[in-house]
Length: 452
Image 1: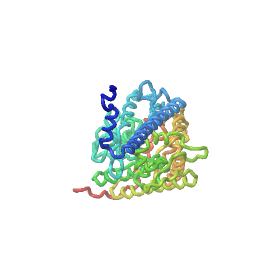
Image 2: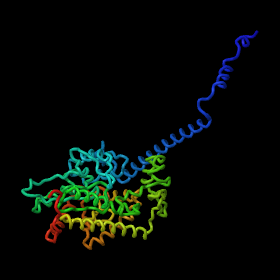
Image 3: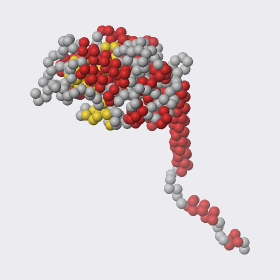
């Protein structure tokens, strides 16, 4: 008898018999094998797309920075080597910081601070992130996190003249240390002009005037009382024109940016890799016709609203944003008449509409910000600034967009943020205007505080 027959059934035959005999622990094994393959393929594709988008952003950013001569000038980074975020590295490379020995250390702290997430705040949507470093202090208060004002005055003999400053990142002091913000310079200038002043900096990054009015309301309801409030606005209100279908909403981000994939707060938020979304907003997104390539604004009902670029749409948008801004000034003036303070409103300067002599860096900033995502906002910003210049003559607010016209010295770190000298000149203009208005009639008597 052969050895094969004496050994009985083969091992392969026994294994097959056992497999047939044992029931499968997973129903529909082929179905789940296919689903597993699909999921694995999707995850791999997701990863590869995100990596490709990130790589393209790196290449694009380095190319643009080198093309405009900025590479090697970025402060706060080893050897001046620029990173991948043009908006941050652009400001740090400006010649306005050459004269300041603190510039490199400041930008190390500023770049680190920019990584801190801004926490949520009811109604105002977000607030400044708490931060403490040698040159940048964002202190915690009962009303939120706010930038510290550096005082050069002596202790006041009597009650100080208290001023509250509101605005976006320019009022907050992006790009400058605590002692070089508009608030710090304004306090020094007001005190130098004969009255001991205290200026509280309530500037909040990325705020529009709607959010600032809400913040002022919160402060007044808590029992706080200023003698004067100053609003420094303009750019953020104008910038959000291209996606703000309702300018009277609390902030211009109520309408979320979306790609053609849909709602960024819904399914697309989980499907679309983050760097792809950033890339779509960074690369020049137009055909030669000037129409958007793959971008839109998402309404609350989920419908994608095409970005309009027609002159008529731009004019209507500018009028809507200025109407909303002036309604805010009227609302604050009503509060001022009841709570006994004076209110001043200033429309901030911007590179998008100025007749100043630009240095090489300011020209680079204008070119870099005029492409990519900002190319959507550019027509609206210019239209809003033009209309603000016209309406500023009516006296509801002071137009500072022409403050630097004819100036040869560089003052802009980017298209809207200023260096120390620019902030000083803005504060000087505000102080002069406040002093010239000091003799005009003020407000009705202040209502009694709680407990009085």
